[in-house]
Amino acid sequence: MADASVAVDIGGTKIAAGVVDADGTLRAHQRQPTPAGGLAELVEAVTGLARKLGDARMPVGVGFPGFIDLAGTVRSAPNLPALVGAPLQPRLEAGCGVGVTVVNDADAAAWGELCRGAGRGGGGLAMLTLGTGVGGGLVVNGRLVRGAHGAAGELGHIIIDEGGPLCGCGNHGCLEAHASGTAIARKAREAVAAGEVAAGSPLASAADLGGEVVTAAGAEGDRDALAILADAGFWLGVGVASIANAVDPPAIVVGGGAAVGAGEALLAPARRACAQRVLGAPSREPPPLRPGELGEHAGLVGAGLLTRLEAAG
Amino acid sequence: MADASVAVDIGGTKIAAGVVDADGTLRAHQRQPTPAGGLAELVEAVTGLARKLGDARMPVGVGFPGFIDLAGTVRSAPNLPALVGAPLQPRLEAGCGVGVTVVNDADAAAWGELCRGAGRGGGGLAMLTLGTGVGGGLVVNGRLVRGAHGAAGELGHIIIDEGGPLCGCGNHGCLEAHASGTAIARKAREAVAAGEVAAGSPLASAADLGGEVVTAAGAEGDRDALAILADAGFWLGVGVASIANAVDPPAIVVGGGAAVGAGEALLAPARRACAQRVLGAPSREPPPLRPGELGEHAGLVGAGLLTRLEAAG
Image (tube, rainbow over all chains, first blue to last red; front, side, top):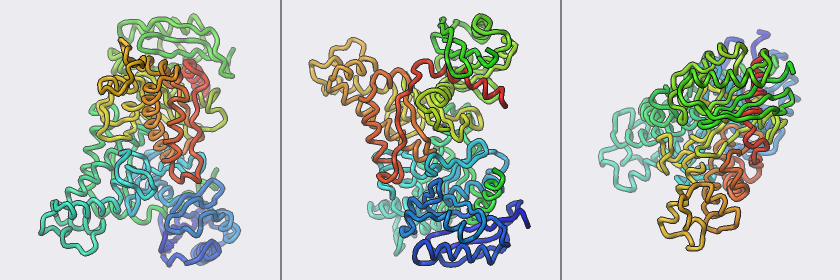
């Protein structure tokens, strides 16, 4: 038990938590709503979870949905805007009375997949989490890449189509603007509006045409949905090739709700687009593009295991 | 002298060599033509230089213009195609009788600028070398990023404009296709052909309109040349923002002949484009975008200093 840690994954609406053993096993997994309010309420919720789940000496690892600088201060948080500027990590350490590691949630997921998931044994990987947006995490030479300001790994915001669709970040043509769940939904709505969707397609009749409608229709073989997922997958592959040319990772792991829902309808076109674009193709093998293995627990497992690293170094 | 090393920078037409002291000072710098022929001739030339310049125990560091895998085999070499498949590093070790480190030439330049140039003290950087193509090198968490196959750092082939201009690698819209000397020349020729260049511009009258004609005309204030350099600089800035969002480097260093010639005519528009696109802008500072400080010696200094790293472990 001395090697276990408390892991907390803060989301915009829910906080997931559990205990992560040294081998990456997640125990006592639970969820509760993210408290309304600001820093004080969040610190109270997390310290309460740590007391309830762990013993008093267990380190605490936290994944946070935003940009945390190297001093542990929240620099941006699209879904928790009240926390921008909050000294989250120091306040959590004071509240919990133990060492607390706070990283971006996709960074935590990347570490989880590296240690116990689809990136096991590789010493590095690039992770993309496809949901409302596209999160990212990068592990190079066995270490999480946090960058000069803690802002590294935002692989959803590599620019692959300058001047292309508007991204939530304000730029045009980011990977996120072509391959997120939001982008998939936008492509579907545009196809319906342009009269490109068959009358019998679930896309044509959906009252609220979100990304999950497209992935569900694709899973049932709807051709229009599959075409949209193939388009998003194509752009995912362009982004993956760009990442491969920059960092040549042992593996690229794709997780997140949109990816899990779409599966090979998204990944197979991505592999094709990547294989054509990776430098040295066709003689060089493209990086393996794999679905995540830890699902929604990747962030918790990674956050827990990252505390071991902090303690060691 | 025990801490010095022999450094060799193999180019498509010339081999530069010298002795690099522990502090990065380059001595006994000289050049000779790259031998015609294959591996045996190249090994003979490099071993000859090592014997002439160093003592028998000095390690040898080599920058090579292509992709060298982690076993030291040449996997691609656009300007020395006869060497593809050659076990360069093991053959050089056998020939020299000492440890030989062989890396991509832009990787060597990145290490040089990190240790003794524009990236000093930062612990990391992204380097772009703008010449006929765009080379790249990446240092993260104090270590050169070589990747799973030795193919990392090809920052000229991040894709920023999918479907855009054809790149020498066969893809469309790579950074190299917009910001290399070759791309600058292509943009100039296209502008002349489209009748967009003033009759009095040196671009309109050049017999052989290469990139250096554009940079020279830009240095004299020619408006058409400056517009072309600003366009290339804009795309350079898009690529730099993409790199910043992926790895958040302490600095981005731009070297190579095209960059040195164009200077601020290229870098100022690049800084503007990057500042608008880096995630978290305008509250986050964009990465410092700096010209290289070591010029054409960056690769030699880096290749020499990399041998110290190899020796250390």
